[in-house]
Image 1 (cartoon, rainbow, N blue to C red):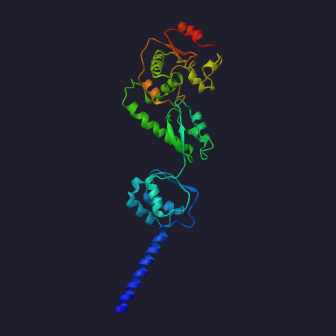
Image 2: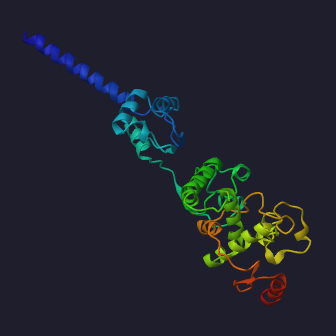
Image 3: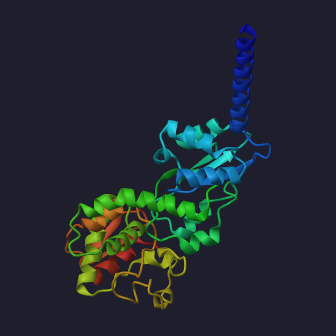
Length: 316
C-alpha cells in the first residue's frame, strides 16, 4: 500500500514536471527567432490572425499561449498596431505584454513640420535617419494641404504611407472640429483649406491673416484675379522678389494673375491659425495688399495706391 502511494506521487511528480517543461518549451522563443528584425502588426488585425502570423514569423512557438496571455492582458481590442523591433529573443508572455502596451523598442526622431511647408519640403525633412522612407511615393501620394504642421516623434522605420497617415490623421483631429463647428458661409471645406494655404504664404500675424482673408474672398466674389505671389512657389518655385513680368504670363492653373478664382488645390499645408482666418475673414474696403521690405503689410483700396506703395516700401 505504501509502495503504491509512493509510486503515485512519483508519477504525479513526473507528470507535473513534464507539463511544466512542455509549457516552458512553448513559451520560450523559437531557435529561429527573428533577432534584429522588425515585425509589423497591422491596424485592425484580429487576435487569431495575429497569433498565426507571429508563429509563421518565428516570433512565438504556440498561438495558444500567446492568445491566453492576450486574453489576460485585455483581449484583442487593447492590442497596439505598429512596428515592433525584435532586438533579441523574447518569450511569448513578454511579446504579448509589449503588443498590449505598445512598446515598439524603435528609435524615434523629433521632427517639426513648419506651417506652410509643401509636400516636397516635408519630404526633404526625411533624411538618412529614415532608411525606409520613399520620397517619390510620398510626393506622389501625399495630399497637399491636408498634412498638419506640428511637432512629431517619428519612428526611424517610418514609410511614406505611414507618414501620410500620421500627418493626415493629425489634420483630421485638429481641423475637423474647427470646420464642423464654424459657419463656412456657403464655402466648402476644400475651398477653406485652399484659401488658408494662400493666406499662409502671404501673412504672418493673425490680424494680417484675417485682413488678407477678407481681401481675397472679396476678390473671389467680385470676379477679380487673386494675384497672390505665394502661388508661384507651386508654379516655378519663385518668391515675390524673384518674379518677373514673364513669370506672370505662365500658363498654369496656379497662376492667380492669369486665372481667376481659387487654385485647383492647396499650394501648401496651412496651420490652424490660417485655417481659422480663412473661415473668419475681416471685412475691409481694401482690395490690395503687399509686404514691405521690413515685413510690414500695407493695404490699398485701389490699384494706383497699391503701385505707389510698391515703390515706397519695396526696393527693386
